[in-house]
Image (tube, rainbow, N blue to C red):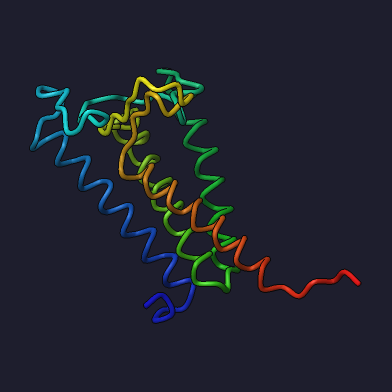
Length: 170
């Protein structure tokens, strides 16, 4: 199925898919479901639906409400997306292109939030009392899932491509 499209097309389609699903889900959660008035909603003992605005990057690092800082963050993120698009354009492996597309779509989804909402809307609250570091309390959205899955696919593709290279040791 992956090889049905050339790698560039696959990557661009996956980016578009993540962007559309992410923004559609955010619009529904905010405007139709009205999560802000209902939160938190317990889904499982370790997952709640909630409303959280992230004014920074992952784990709210570099959080700021200043417009200039937000625009700077958008510019940095845009530069990263351009670099990923260049990498996608040069990619020849379908798995690599799919991973890059998922990351690009997720980044664009979060950039869209910063640009039009002032912060990134997060809804899925993963929590545990186990001492597992930062994952003990993590709030995320569909764009973040795309980024994480994309990074995992790049890692898998990297490991698989290293296994298929001939050994140069004598």
